Length: 350
Image (tube, rainbow, N blue to C red; front, side, top):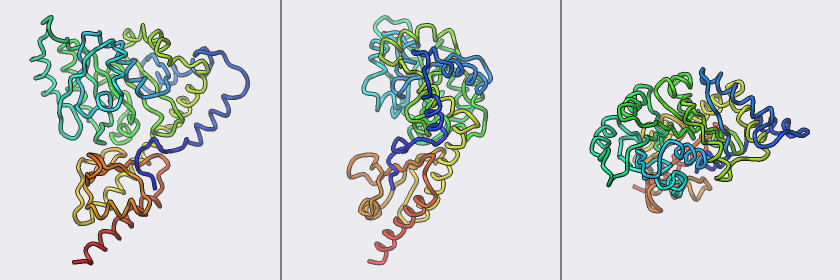
């Protein structure tokens, strides 16, 4: 009944099992345990290249600390106006970079365009002491609109970054959902496209609380250890973070979970768009459905006990519905059936 977010879910059984297993006996602290050490090899295999990996607890910590090594205090980070780093992280990127500025751009379907970036950077005042200096581009995959960047779109943005000697950061809180949609290898949509650092999300897709900051450009990772410690994100019992991440990427659990969530979102969207007065706001590429519903349908669903967010204020008829790894067919069917009943009841009054 709760479609507010993929943060409302429990934990994948496989990850719970891994936590119980790693809970046996003693292990060295601060990442010196065997589970954490294995992550470097595990993620290198997953991404088909050598990487440097740092587990952290939250997506905000992952994004803010990753950006802190890419951007000086006088630097600028280009991102979409709806990006999580701009809207939902309470100034953490600015704080951990020591004062860098987020420069936001619009873009259809929650995406930045390479041309808009090129135009903005060209007018930014590079080398002018009075202006912040372009330092990084941050894109979200999947986006805050539930859409997915194609490989060519990421490559075009990366080319802009390289032209201007900027780093490219990817917020991958729903990275699994994007990869499941694209059907490509995780390497093909990251470092092979020019991404320097990825914040690899797990919490929204079955973990209890675990994210990985993955450096493809390993030279950029040299100070991350110290920044993570200084920010209070160096876990003493790191094995409990690492065990979640290890289980998450073992036997493609991350992709299975994401594929199921995506399928439930597609089913939800298909069912609801058959109703009169209903319109999708964005393509449903991942596990989020942004949709315009009649007020009577919204009120009826809320009265029935369904939970979701009105996306543009308390009176908005644009709602966000989010599915997850444990969303059932039955719950999707129930919401569609309830929406249909409220729509029919309205029509019968005419």
